[in-house]
Image (cartoon, rainbow, N blue to C red; front, side, top):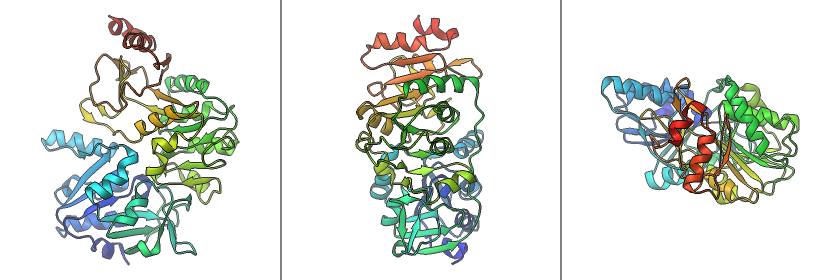
Length: 419
């Protein structure tokens, strides 16, 4: 059916599960936004992680919030911009629902009770299955629990292998709409990114299994690993940097103890060549986030190494990775999932990367007291890396931690941190 007809199936008060990132369906969201603008739907809520311009320019427009209420589980630049606008208007900021990424399916399906899934999928195969493509994450569970499953079929969406499909029997409505997928531009790396990456690469042994986040530092780490051998991948996010390691032969997954020979991910973001690369790749598998991000599953990968970023870290080792200047910047995501999973793995390491300063060098990211919530508790912290070195906090007292973290802070802030 048409996007307008499919959007008309969504009733007032619906609890809509909107796909994450690349899988946000443009035609459906534009049609739903048009209904809201005409006053044809009221009291609906949108639950989702990591919106893109696709949602930002349609259902998340501020003037529609009275009819389509955004309920974010992880902010992006879209929500950050909405919050800045709200502050100027004296309005409320976008609601944030704190949750670990591994628990998102349970929260959405069991605790909130989402009733409608809208997502973008690859064309149906001969077995009557739609591939979730770049985004298995929480969509896999929602497709099996929601009363209404509305899919937007796009030939540009790569078909991915693994536990990554929706059966035709679960689908309420099909919209066919071909549009190039959202692409994430390459990050501009700074010297500090490469310095941090070089230190992290030195902590990773041949044969390790990797989890990488998104941004300049993880991309720099991938580039710094070009001389490593026999690496594996078990990651929530699949990126062009990790794909490049597969293409070069650095990643062959030959020493993985879980899913040997396979790169495992739960969602992917990149550019068009990257989407072509992961499409139907025999060595790449997508799985639900409840599996990929389960710390017990992560820990089954020997020599697991997780690399995640934080916004600030206090002298005891606690990390705030989600609030900046008093405003929600992102959310917890899967950071603690992988910190705990990697730490529990045989030979595993959890690495938190952090620039030493922010705001053009005027503010230290290593602080006495956090200005936001604790994303990774001090009890779980392992290795912290800035451009000035690495601090392994395991087995260290509070005093020893403060000394180790002060030593990798920017030199201009060390005296005030140690005073």
